[in-house]
Length: 301
Image 1 (cartoon, rainbow, N blue to C red):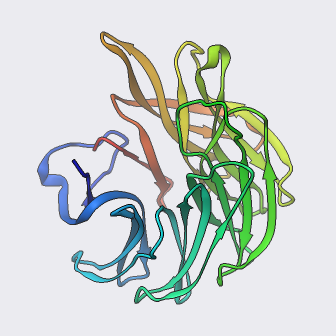
Image 2 (cartoon, rainbow, N blue to C red):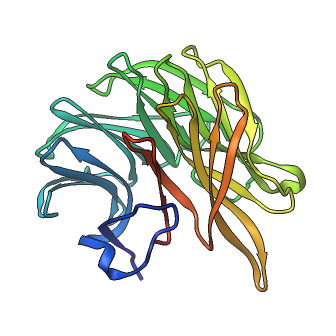
């Protein structure tokens, strides 16, 4: 049975959400598929991205969630990250194991797109502004299953036309998966990562890279090597701290469950605090508001 791309705007003011219907402002079903990313379109509405019918898909909605336009190229794949730049949207995702970058105007017209091949499979791509008018795209595997295949991180700096300005791949020789990427005011990059831990379980980490994509530090976030953990989202806070969210596993009667977590990391890689937010959940997205409050979205909300 196909899943539906269901876009629901909710009033979420805490790490663990309330599941009462009173919190739902509006919802919109767009078709059989999955939604992976959402961003604001100035003060006119929102843009969401994902996949419908196995194709990359972007929907442009007004504030009442009426669909204004859409974009879906004639290739298989998905959209996993969106950023806006003046009169256009930079979208990133994957297609047939390659990184996919598309530039689209707000009417859904294609301004440019490209497929970028690496020496490993790319199933997820994240975007962040660099602060100099360009955007850093980070691609990696999207699979939580560890296999005997090449893994790596594909860095591609692109301009607002989707043209590649800089390329760099790192291939560690073992499983590695990137969640999202962010950049601070000094131009350093921070990545939510997952690697192989003790006993072959996936472990959650966070890593920092400088402007030349040289690794500065990497900090492990998981506590129990007998259970897996994964970092999913990352954001640079106004205080200089880096916020990371994801999930850790724990034992239940019929196997393992997932527990959502969020953590604050200092600029030298030290863990300042870590909170377990909710059982049977994963913390997939977050942002800090102007008052310094961290909002965390759990996937089961």
